[in-house]
Amino acid sequence: MDKTGPRATTTRPTQSSSDHFCGLATMEGSVTALPIIAVKIKVRGGPLCTETYALLDNGSNSVCSASLLECLGINGKKMKPKLTTMHSSKDVDSLIVTALVVTDRDKNVVITLLEVLSRQALPIAKDKITRQEDVERWLHLQGHVYLPELNSEVDLLIGANAPEALQSSEGIPAFDGGPYVTRGDLGWIINGTTGRKQKYHHTKPDKISVVFNCSAQFQGTLLSNELFQGPDLTNNLVSVLICFCQEPVAVMGDVQSMFHQVCAPEAERDLLQFLWWPQGYFSEKLEEYRMTVHLFGVVSLPSCPNYAMHTHT
Image 1 (spheres, rainbow, N blue to C red):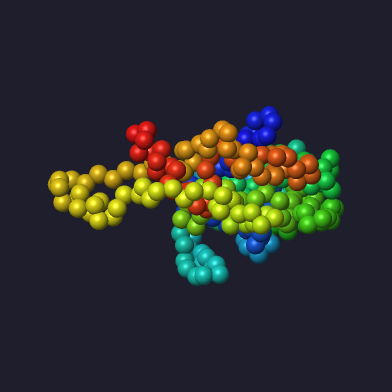
Image 2 (cartoon, rainbow, N blue to C red; image 1 turned 120 degrees about the vertical axis):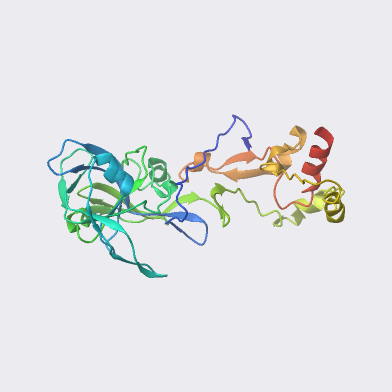
């Protein structure tokens, strides 16, 4: 998409490689912040120290990833604890470590983690980490809260067996639908909606889809009513099946993000204008943008992209 003026840019959050992810979203699609904080962690009495993100959870025991133990160069005692979730309860292979120390990034506070279980990985997607840009969306937090950014996954869960890490000493209340913030010994923690909008396809959790309501009317006008549907250029299924009988080997291909590979004509992009906050900062004034590609949901799809493919390939 572009801005009706200087060109706008968009960003896409990264995703962890885990099969299942921990995260929350409101019914309106705004991501709800998990209590994740940047920390330093080391082995008690050892020279190695690393930075990572930690999830604070007062409903669990402390857990770390196998990669964190490898980074710190330590092994734990083998055990088989019972892992209970909302869906199941089962025995799992794990290590238990008793020599980890966690600090804030300035090393002003030192907290010993008495018992930490290890798992192969923690199922927390990297894009669930609250960023400084999430803070800047809300006027009541601007200038008060700073969140450091690390090039790291969430490799540590600090649970109820480390209460010093969970307690808070001050906070900023929620305002105008925004998040509230608490400050603990390890730093600032964001709680509540971030205002960051995301929509995921259930079969493609690492993909973000921009969705417009093309059936919405404004002053009696509906976009699809102003467009021609165009001819049906989709390959007939019967002819496709017959082609399978012609040769011994069938080859199938797919055009990645096909609809967004085809641009809307420059002269017609003003018909695809919409309002949005610059870079997603809700505290800024709304600005006009316009799509540079065809919209999902309009009556002219899929005719336009199919015509482009048949014409230029």
